[in-house]
Image (tube, rainbow, N blue to C red; front, side):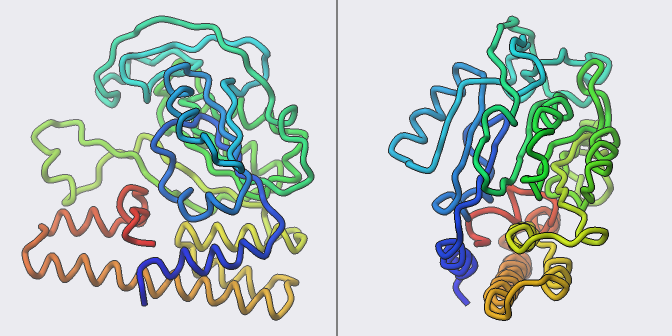
Length: 317
């Protein structure tokens, strides 16, 4: 099986569907690797308040008719201030908690800038179902609450959530999970874990012990165990469970859904293609290790199901 077979099957299927929306809060280049799988078939809304990152995105989306970019922050208030740091990945509405500098990369505060902000439910007015992805550096729950009026049209939420207060007064992963649970979502699992070795001498050996996980990209979906969903919700959830390798759960949802036999057969072929390609990729990595082209620790990292830059890299499609 060719490595790109999954992407081809996914594209063929999505081309027969009414377009879904993908809402990306806190966009920056490069976009998440998994977006490459469906970027031609979904309406993609990008929100980024940083002038510098916005200009990069503006060049990227030029001539892409299904990309819609806005230089705005997302939140509950119309005017917000962003704290800019020398490390762009730390810039946030919130201030960095310097008590956790052992976890933070090195940084310097640059300045504070005022930005315009909007609620998600004021921007997205279509009746299409949406996937909501939030990476707001500690401000995720506030962004999520700004979508309150359209959460019934969002069966999938992908959100970066911290386990420690990396920013002052921020809400943590359990706060986000609690909020979404009350809105009839269930937490499927982590897509990417952000880990760190705090002792400098251990960094090279971090495949042989558990590092602390200070943040994760978490996948939430509408809770299909307690409430029947409509057909388009089932399709979108099955697609994203498969994209993020939750293939067993995807098959379970597929069997329990009210989808037609034709759609079920198409989605099942997609899940099987994902499983076959995963097997090919893991075998390739294992063979490279046997040939001593990569180390054991490198094999462990490349085989991780919780690292977007490894298992989601382009050669695994």
